[in-house]
Image 1 (cartoon, helix red, strand yellow):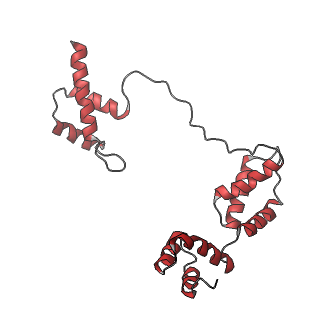
Image 2: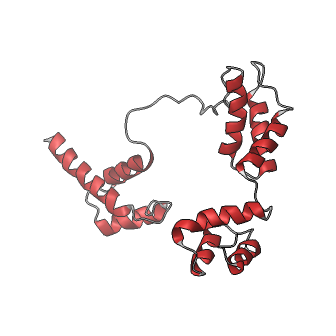
Image 3: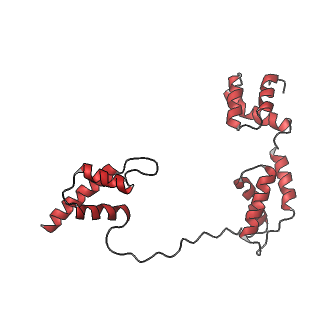
Length: 190
């Protein structure tokens, strides 16, 4: 720790609850070399007892896994519960916790049960014709064969179909579809 300034150590300790990237930015601002900052951060956090080393985390995970039995009877709910316990106790991501649980199943030469996927329900029968916005636009065209873009825009605004969820314009796209439907209808009827 002699090559690490006390100022850098203090910044790390004072900001221990912040995101690693925020602490790294502060360290680099104090003159810590970019390519060494991450290693220094990890070293100080471990030495000050603010973060577990991999060996300490593995040891704690092993203790938590002592009460968990990986067997053919183990349910996906039990797996999820164990992953949440490890994640909370070790303050790690679910992916890291899942790796510890998966290792128990691998040691027993078993497949880890997966959570069942939510059923989306049966699809209803499809009918011919347009649905959704395409159906609304085509019905508007049938009722207003000679509409202008301004009239169409007013209609789309009235129906609340003029913007996407992110706020992007949908009128121009659907106007082009409407124009294509006009051309198709004319050529098809000829």
